[in-house]
Length: 250
Ligand code: NAD
Image (cartoon, rainbow, N blue to C red; front, side, top):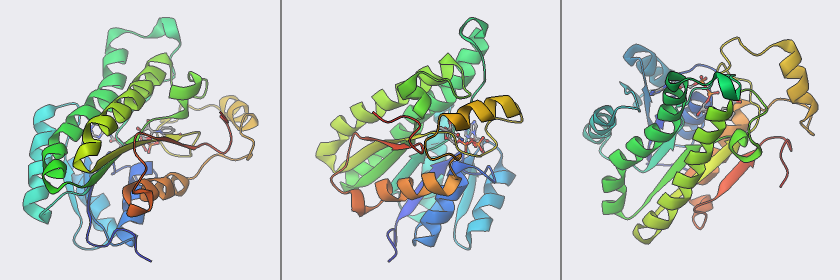
């Protein structure tokens, strides 16, 4: 059964080849959605969209810039004729300790996850409200719930906790318009976000804290995003769904 037939989905930060956004885009496409991949680099975004099959598009968009988000939403409407789903997936992380966080670290990390989630949501909400339907899925992190301790520093935990608050406040405000907003809290997933800075010792320590005994796969997160984007979750809003192999059971 195809769960997203005829739906149009925007996925931010979807160009990273082994990333959660790309895996989500592929699963959405496999389920009948037409996907717009937004990412910093136009060529990377276009190449990722081409990988999904025909009809999908890639657009440059820095989600920390409101004008970029508005322009991208307009371009999706012009090219694809609608917007039904937004996955706010773009995010960066840094393995810093509390006292190492400088202003530029704080700005970089909170701006992509939190400001970006706000701006991109604001860019699509008028469309979703008008059609009285839509699903927004925000990528938070187990770091928001357990106070880091995996890879990202306290500023990352704070940004992702901010995403949870924003998700829930959006759910409350948008529910009367038939628009849902939910968050995913992935645990430790094998992608390139750690940018080569994850040492073998760090990895061993993280794996020791995962009852299922393995890192997650991008497809584990994509499956959850599919559930939240589709009508299977029609009565689910304001929730945070854990995809963490049991690393935080609460
Ligand atoms: P990734 O580094 O593979 O991909 C992130 C993508 O976001 C990249 O393509 C990058 O170019 C893009 N991006 C960065 N800044 C951007 C901006 N300003 N505007 C638009 N795009 C931007 O990372 P990933 O592991 O796939 O992570 C995806 C999301 O999941 C992130 O929000 C991350 O914080 C979250 N997450 C990841 C893990 C994990 O273990 N991998 C765990 C919890 C949460």
